[in-house]
Image (cartoon, rainbow, N blue to C red; front, side):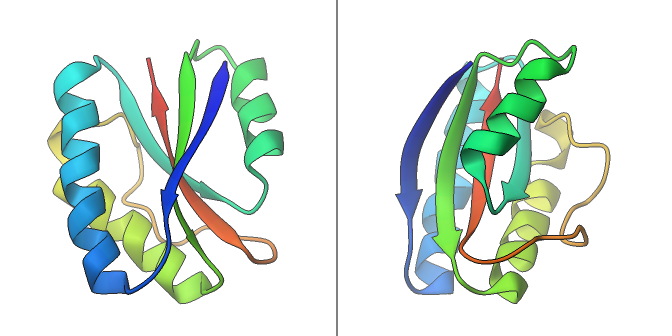
Length: 108
C-alpha cells in the first residue's frame, strides 16, 4: 500500500472547506473510500495492509495538535460523504493517542 502525505494545517473552517471538496473528488474517482484518524500514519498503514481490505493507497489529508479538531473533522467529513464511503461508524469518538493527529483517506 502506498502512503502519501498531502495534508493541510491551519484554520479549522478553511481546512474543512478544502477537505470537503478533496474527499468528494476521491469518492468520485475511486470505488472505495474510507476516512480515519491516527497519530502514527506509518503504523496505521501497516495495520490496514495486514487486514483483508486490499486498500491501494493511504493519503494523509489533515494534521492538527488538537484532539477536539481531529475528532470533529473526521465526524464532519464522514457525515458529509456518508453515502459514498465505507465507514461503519460516524467517527469522532475513537481513542487518539498523542499529538500530532492526522486525518487520512484510504483508497481502493
